[in-house]
Each structure stands twice: as C-alpha cells, then as structure tokens.
Length: 264
Image (cartoon, rainbow, N blue to C red; front, top):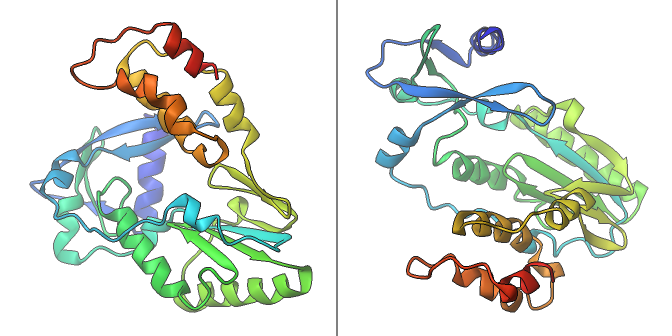
C-alpha cells in the first residue's frame, strides 16, 4: 500500500492526475515488474468496450527491420512514459477516472490501458518523424532506433533527432537510452552490422518452455515463438499440429506428433 500511495503522489505532483467526482471509476491492479517493484495498472475494460476504435495501423516488426543494411552504429531512445506526454481533452478527464483505497482520481494526460492509446501515440510519432522515417530511424510507439553507416553520419542523425525532440517538447527517459553502440537490443531483437538476431534471453525462454497442458498455454508458446518466425524456416508447418489443438471443437490430446514438433 505504501508503494501505491507513493505512485499516486508522484502522478499528482506531476499534474498527471487530480481528485475526481466522476461517475466513472475503473479498478486499479498492481503489476510486478522484472526488478521486483510494482506499477499501477488501471483496468479500463469497461471504457474500452464503449470506445470507437482508432484503426491507425501499428507497423509490422518485420517491415521495420528491413531498413538496416549497411548500418554499424546505433542509438536507442525511450520516450517512456510516452503516453503521459499527451494531454486528454478536458471534457474527457472524467472518463479516465479510477478508484482505489486512497480515493477517486482522474487523468489529465493519456493513461496506459486505453484501447486507442498505442494508435494515437503511433500516429503522433509518424507525424513528428516523417522526414526521417526509414531513412535513418524507425519508431515503434515510444521506442526510437537511430541507425547509421559510420560515426560521422551517426552524429548528424542523432543531432537531428534530438533537436526535433526538443522542438516538439517530447521527453526521453535517459536511463533507458543507449547512444553510439555497435550492437543494440531493440524490440526483443539484437541488431548489429551483421544483421538482426534473436535476443538470447528470449531464445532461452523458448528452449526452457515446458510442454503445454491446455490450448491457452499453446497459444502463449506459439505467440512467443511466432514473434521470431522470420528465423524459423517452415514455421507454419512446424506449428500446425499444435495450432490444431487450439480449435474449439478439437479435443486437447498432447501426443507424440505434438511433442515432436514442440521440441523441433
């Protein structure tokens, strides 16, 4: 509870939230992060069901990664908390309200958990960086990667992006940024002048995965493995016996064929 109170105070001190008397009130959950700390997650399922969906497309990871040929120097910029840099229209503050033991609050900036948040932020990023996209930078929501063929070129590229960030008043989280690296981890891949590689940590996660015991567990496994399908020749064929078990009218029977393809 102490951590909840501290996070609420921080959000309030930054002007991100304020006390609310809204008829709306989404529940608050605590999600544990990798470092053992917790962050507030607001369950906006009710609001999201009533929201008209923004169909702005998010880029395909494979399309993003087709740009790096000839590059050897990389910098990564993280705009987190990116969504909080966009202000909500005042008449919509009340819809973002959430409730917890210390009171009732509403956001004045865009919170995480809204169904249209990724699309809205991606739209903004594409507008801001349109002159440079696919020339020497890619952006996926609030993650930016700058790539160059050498250090001299990288200096020019990095300067252009940082000046644009300053001009548009978009702020990076310095502790999450990496500058002037010959190798960088980005969107769960490792990128260097040799090309694009599977993140070793994710590779180990796939290797250590225990045999699925339900259709849900199969979907989780195939979701992770499928993220790297560009590196797996004949992925669809390998996954087919497992995918079949996720169908509604198919009885779940984990047999030798599934084991063989799972351990491929």
